[in-house]
Image (cartoon, rainbow, N blue to C red; front, side, top):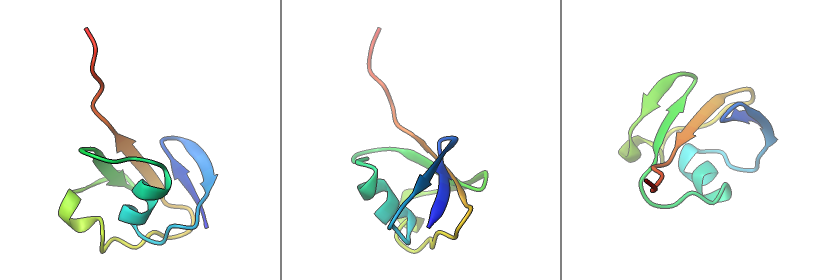
Amino acid sequence: MKIIVNGDPREVAATTLSELLAECGYSGRVATAVNEVFVGSSARIDLALADGDRVEILAPMQGG
């Protein structure tokens, strides 16, 4: 399916938000939103993605 991840169009095999995170290589703590609506970590496994969805994934960065 075709979705937008962090502003970039992507073709993905994932059907849920948790599968998408794994497919994109995210692990640990991240913040997620689908179509501009925040999705908490406990809801990701059940959130089905649809063609054209806009997903934002924010991961903390270290540095000084």
